[in-house]
Image (tube, rainbow, N blue to C red):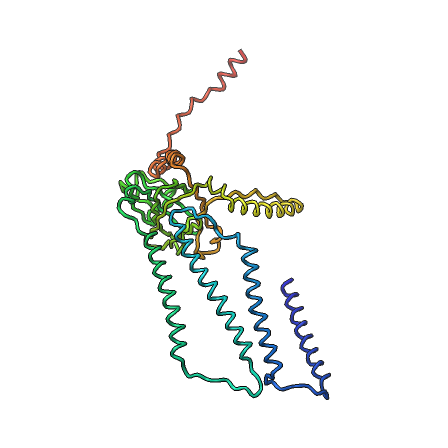
Length: 382
């Protein structure tokens, strides 16, 4: 009903404005005014100055954005290759910022300088080979250099030599609407075979438990990684296209139904150390101030206060995969090697969990013979 009333009010306001416009037109009958739709020198000058005003707005807003939201960037990378990604991003953004600033100024300046004037004719060029060469060759050189550097960086990130594979930890990231699970390969460094047709009960990843390589696999819902150790991620999707996105590690790879994709990196900053990072501390303080303010409103309305925010690494989905896409995340903890080994040792294998879940139920003990109540009553009477 509220929506209908709002719509009705908007329609009536539109009709009122239309009628006022007609009344205004009637009041102008008999007056002398410029009714030509052809722009004159005054109109062109106004448009020229508006162009300058707009480019000024662009520059002012850009400076304000850097000041107001500049602290929202990710900050310290938590993986060894993160510095290379940040360098590539910095170069790209610097080039874009320079080109945008320079070209936008020329665009709006020329719109003002060469604005229309009475009696002035525009000089038409069918083509200009020199200008064409300049604005073709320069972007080609810049983009070629950027692309080559990007490919070099990407190949270094994606390449895993045999020595790294032997010492690496193999983890499967399994995506489904709307959550994540992780499966750790055992000492054999090999994940057991899996198929969605084998999903049953606690075997939510469809692992083939008859495969010898699957006997030491461990399935968890919270991802733990040891610092300084190469991690090889094997990624699968159960249903639709997902994207495993770990922003602080500068890592992202699509999870495609029916195939296995791979990404690898080496964590370089533990969760505890990142929580002490100056930029992260400032962000956490800022967030908690907002939460405290919002909590006061909730408590005043009879609700519960929000819990304080604590920084954690997160695995997110970076593809719009459905209604709860925004909530598809898994906590990542980067431990010291000793902490990681202790945590992993406590986790049972999937084979053990399956065996316990499907163990035959113990037979209940036979009941004790029923007591003859008549004898008991007789004894009492006696």
